[in-house]
Length: 133
Image (cartoon, rainbow, N blue to C red; front, side):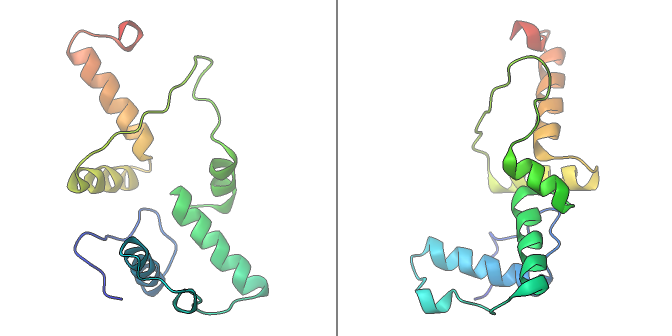
């Protein structure tokens, strides 16, 4: 399936360009309700080939660059600090999200780390330190 303008390769992906296009095509088909079981099979892998592919997919899904980091993320991220943490879900325009992912990738960071830093700087700039927020 062709890649649409809205679909961009995910950050920190170790999938090949062809693999990324294949999975984005499946994503688009699923979103449109077009998937049928026989269309999703793709290549049949086994052994080390299947293991390597599953590692690449897990690293792609968790936005990590090593399988060890991917497993750690998939099993649960470590606490950021002794303070309680909250998970925020933020809706943002796609271009902003893509810019955040690109910035994080270029700086060896994560979108979450970039967001935390930006929010902290924003609050400090507006004389509202995070502890008082």
